[in-house]
Length: 283
Ligand SMILES: [Zn+2]
Image (cartoon, rainbow, N blue to C red; front, top):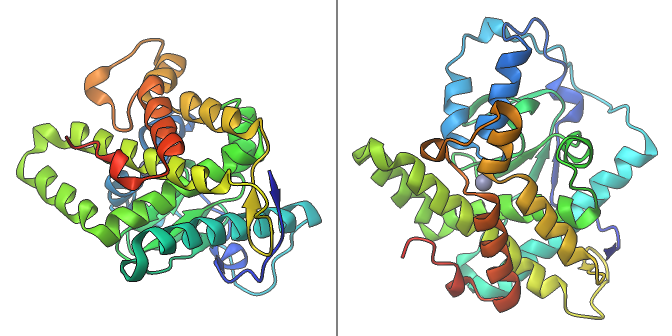
């Protein structure tokens, strides 16, 4: 991927404020379960986190300057560039219906309208304040734990979260939440459909980023091997793959995001078409 830094207008930097999580009452097993349950989900699970007693967490951040390495600062510019590019793409696709969001960067834990969340829940989109939340350490996780290296793998994750923002703007998110509360048994299946649509939307952005000669300020351009990185990432975070690795077996009724094959398929569908209308996972 090639990209140029922009003005960080897509970033809401809370790294200095969110601070470390102190005495967390969950053991390592709990943290792993959290990670598995909520990898790339967000809201459902977050409200669960938000219901925990606040005393389980001690945020020690006091605000002010962020101590960050030059490498981390480069990641901030990267996130900004991808956010800028995805949003320009959606502005083109949706016109006046599109309203901008920002990526809230935090460390360890953060308070959002969706509740208090730890980094272990992974990146998430909060419909309540319409922001994407991200701990930059995710990119290490993606590389080391999920074996999905590469900048386009990282960009896919961001574009997936922006896909949830699009669902909030188009009313899909509200409709699904309503259906879920009306029919709890359909909850997971509806969640899978919504997540696969966000994957497809990430692919739609990838299609536009793959056009040549477009790397300018706050814009990205893809290399030939980038699609492969994205597909590998989509496969690595499929429900069946994650379940198999953490439990040794697959529980289809617990799926919330779709299998590896489904995630790859829908990402690919968006990437090939570049058309959000090809992303109707609710049919
Ligand atoms: Zn998601």
